Length: 167
Image (cartoon, rainbow, N blue to C red; front, side, top):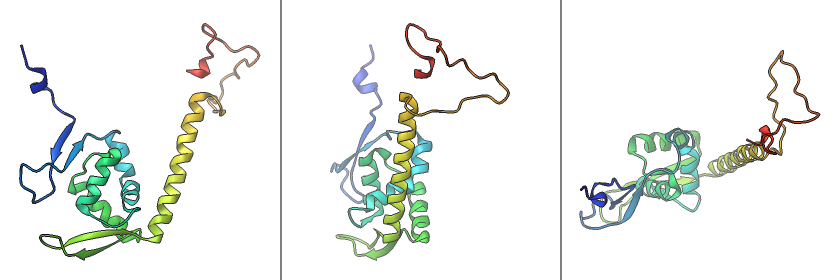
């Protein structure tokens, strides 16, 4: 009989900071909470949100993203985003001495980046509201097919008292 605990693949992996001894546990690497396409699309916004409390280096941003449910991004996806945000003026980067090693780049949110984050949060809140209102039926959604007859609105069809629009 297989050992289920031993054979199960965990969704959490314990990792340490770069350069730490192998036995030291620093954080948990979690599986992302959302589909990969959402994470790719929202990674720039998530990076800006991670920098809102204060400057971070790349590894710190990765840890903050992991904590926020984005998983631990690979350098091949994080650093291009950081470069694009820096090119757009949303963040700045500067080399700072490492506490016990080489210098590393530290990223800081700029006023333009803060404005961008505020706008993106507002847009996401509108999207969430639109999705929520569509599911509760509180917003009218035009589902008419061009050339089709208009639906009979006098008495909606029901199945055991449930309107088909509620599904």
